[in-house]
Image (cartoon, rainbow, N blue to C red; front, side):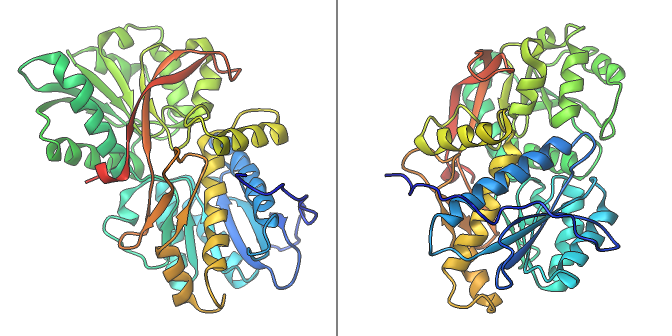
Length: 411
């Protein structure tokens, strides 16, 4: 039996607390001895879906935890970061100093995560990253209190480089691969580019940079950038946008010949269900995409349960943010369950550094595990091709023809 029958989480609640600095949603136990976790997500604006999906992922994790006596009681507080570093810094400090949080979690934007990580180190509380990817936080390890429960850009780009070597290089003959790159003009986009070029060189892939473009985050008009990509012959366009930005880019590019001009790849966030659902039949066939969690891969009992439970609660399918938040809360509970005393930060740190979790994104025979030297979770990355498939509406295209890369490949 994969898991015990889940008990009803009787303490699940949504409370508006009257602190003058902010109000927040509370989930989980209201017991005084509960371990407090403060989570920061964008709940409004273009990134708001990630926050709402993360909240449901946390609810599912709390249901799982409540089904087992070995896990501690958790009280999870969630606040809207609005994707602003200054606001997130203030909220993180309030979580610790006012509400007594022992853990911080979440954060979508990499630039915001860097600021929250500083707060965690100053306050000596653990920050469990669930939905940002800059490799600057883990490669090399820069913060003893930071642990990430989703792929970083280095891992995604190594998998992307291997995909290029295996699938694209054989098609172009004896010349360098011509690459154009477009990404948002902030920490994440530059981190991806640095990790991608390093991975291409490590894999000894001959390549030529045709152009690099840096639209601002949340750009509304990509026409000049699309025209710049069309202006020069290119074999592969690598796009590192996410969420609404990627949706807007693809919609605007559909009115041009961009997807006939070159192959198109997004190796980290492009295969997120949010993108597939919003675009529907506007999503071109044949795009090379990946994501930090896929609703249709792996086809395992655990992944099917997670996706079904999310849909049962929300009426829709999850974006990858949901599984990331689920993983983060489960990681906290598992680490505490393996610690003799919750007051020993050194014991908790050791438990997190040796963490092993079987998560919805894990294929049969594999469990995610923490690299103790970098505090970066090690997981399988699957890259697929957009193909007509209406099994998870409103998406009309899902990924298939998978290329799968295990952590031993990320070297």
